[in-house]
Amino acid sequence: MDIAEKIILEDCPYCGGAGLLEEENGWCWYVTCMDCGSQTASFEYRRAEDREAAAGKAAAIWNMGKAIRSDLGE
Image (cartoon, one colour):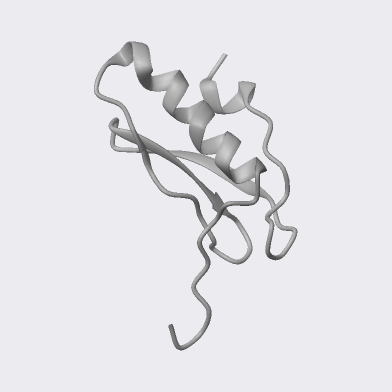
């Protein structure tokens, strides 16, 4: 089973949209909202053994409501 399928994400803290756990070129994970584009910080990993832990950290931060959002004009 893929890491992203194992992790449960809450709805976006800003708009209530669906969150998507994404991996960036094999070095970090972050969560982004499919509707408004808000996202978490990137959680880096250097070893394959740390990959799942980094994904879990990104999901945990998202589920706490700690996301960054850019509004128009910012």
